[in-house]
Length: 143
Image 1 (cartoon, rainbow, N blue to C red):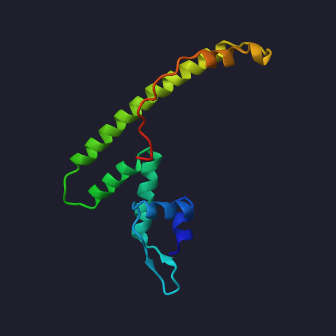
Image 2 (spheres, rainbow, N blue to C red):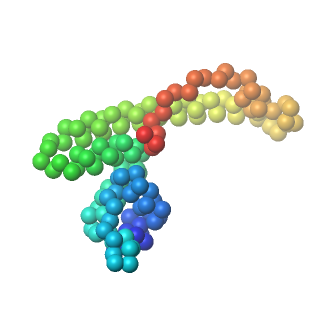
Image 3 (cartoon, rainbow, N blue to C red):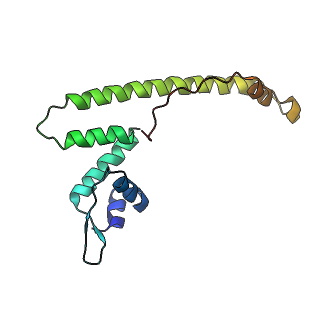
C-alpha cells in the first residue's frame, strides 16, 4: 500500500508517517520500481501502536523502548510494567503542575472582576508583580 493509504488507516497525515520514519520509530518501507514507498500490514500495526502511545502522552523515547521490547517476544514484560509505572509518575507530576497553573490563573482572574482601563487591570498588574519561578524539568514528547 502507498503512504497515503497507510496514513488513512492510522488516522494521521502523510507527514506524520514520514516523521516517524525519520525518527526511526517506523521502519523504512520497501520501494516499488517507480520508487514509491510500499507499506505492509506490519507498518499499519506499528504505526497504530505509535499513535496509541502518543495518545497516552508517551515520549518518543518511551515509544522506542516499548518498540524495542516488543521486538523481543520471548522476554518477560517486567520492563514494560516499569516503563508504564514511570510514565504514570510523569503524568502525576504534570497534573500537579497543571493544578498549580489553574490556581494561579484563577487567582489572577479574581483580581479583575469588571472591565477597567488597561493601566488599572488587576490581571495585568498581577502578572507584572508575580515572582518568576525556576522552570521545572518537564517530561515532553521531545525526549
